[in-house]
Length: 212
Image (cartoon, rainbow, N blue to C red):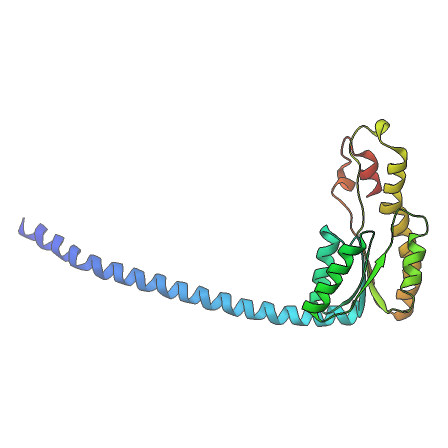
């Protein structure tokens, strides 16, 4: 009984020591993880600066974004402005474009040009090309688009025609017009915003899926 009591007392005495040792190890691990995160964050910040600089050198100084008044287009514009790119913002809703342009010019110290164009019109691409002829555009983000849902036979033919103009015809003509400019400057790029529906062909969305 005495030996068992002594063994129990020894275990009781050792338990706080083990708990203290475990706590110290945990604290050490936490400290190491925190330092690792700080180091990683520092590397990411440096990489972000380097990426922004190299990106602007390759695709700057001006980027054009269609459908910039909302959604993905606005996000493109905000991200590009944060990287120091001047912008041409294209959409129908000019008030939204002007508000976005003013905000990005103030917060990002860039220049933003507003270009009000209805991309469903047959002359939309030509309007954009003419309006930007004096600008050194290195990146074209053809993002504008919209879709129709429902029984294909019941959809409005005019609305379907407008959708094909916005989603297909105008982007095609923009690429046709900007490719020679980008080739002449020797660098740049074009981004087309697509949709997962382009890959799977959704029921009651046949025309939109095909257009993307």
